[in-house]
Length: 460
Ligand code: ATP
Picture 1 (cartoon, rainbow, N blue to C red):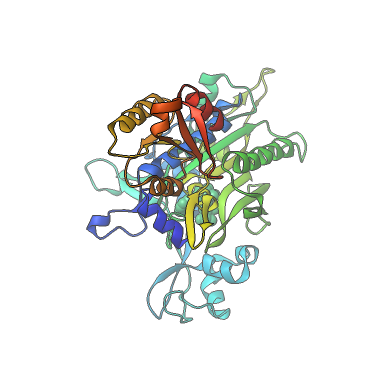
Picture 2: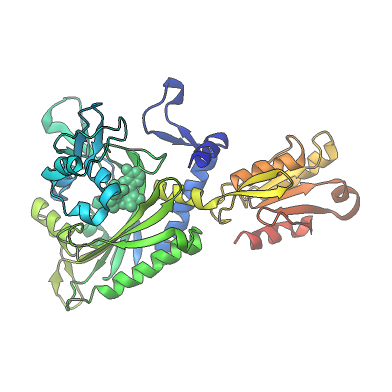
């Protein structure tokens, strides 16, 4: 993980937040290559799950909503973590996470909130800060970020920054089904920021207080039989697996689907999985949440808002749809993509290179164009001309700093799939350029007039 954090800072992917003011705990800024990578992941997700499907539409709902939304969703009452204090050093921790490390998720889920502190002491779990075992009882700590709306700081004006993007979808269910004339089953997708006042954020961008999610609510008819929902549920599982492997390049051995047992699963859910990724230094961590949530969410909003969120089918049957929820963390996925892409390779005696083997569609820069020598105007002019022609088609970079070997290394570190070099043969002999492949490091000559087609085909 250290190498990834260092590369992210050195190469402009992710910077520590508010750095010139001494930082802001656990806030991160996405630099020029980080934002390209993040946008490319979100674009690939949107293309896969919205653009290429007939049954999913998009949404961009507000971050600050009527606070009743979060009462209805259960977040105000139940979105709590068990906060424990170490009596030795006074640091605060999430009791459930400390227990999970020792006894696993399933056993931890069976421990009632009020017994978390006692259990930590019983199992002699030590404080990660000072090494002592002396825990307070757990207190409920609500994760919603409160804010005040308007000019008066009054309890009546309290609102919450959204704790997840999903609720924006439920509260727009009627608007979408009315305007889009979608027949069930259909889904609504949304990408955007979510906020949680996490007790122990950390591990770089794995757990932050401000992060991005990509969520879908897929509405289905109430199942007529006990297991009718299984078919769409399993179809979604396959689509999600394909997305992680084919579009993001996450390898099977680094992924696992962990089913929640009854203790861990919410009372309204019939089946829930955490899709976990094997993060370097951190171990298995949740990347994605996947659940069949029955009709719980829409019913909660019906109850609290009084609005009619039912659906009427062609035969005039009126009912509350059920839903399947694939919930992706965008910024956490970005960390998995970085981890998967990171490679250190021997490239000669005592020589290694760092290369980020992103899928081409995700790479921040697709093509880098170089003149062989910086001080030969004829080479620079030709390279500039090629660069300007390619730029409207692909995210490109022009680089004439240092020698070509150094430029390759830099482009390898940001994961650029192709480097194009203009040399004297280009001008004097064959109007061809050298195209160097990031992964194989092989170089081929390509005619300038064929370059665009060649790259387009390779970058597909
Ligand atoms: P965790 O158990 O890690 O706290 P969660 O079960 O609360 O996660 P969900 O509410 O299911 O997470 O949110 C869906 C997804 O949003 C997660 O799978 C994760 O990718 C992402 N996510 C949740 N909390 C954070 C966070 N604090 N920082 C970054 N990503 C997050």
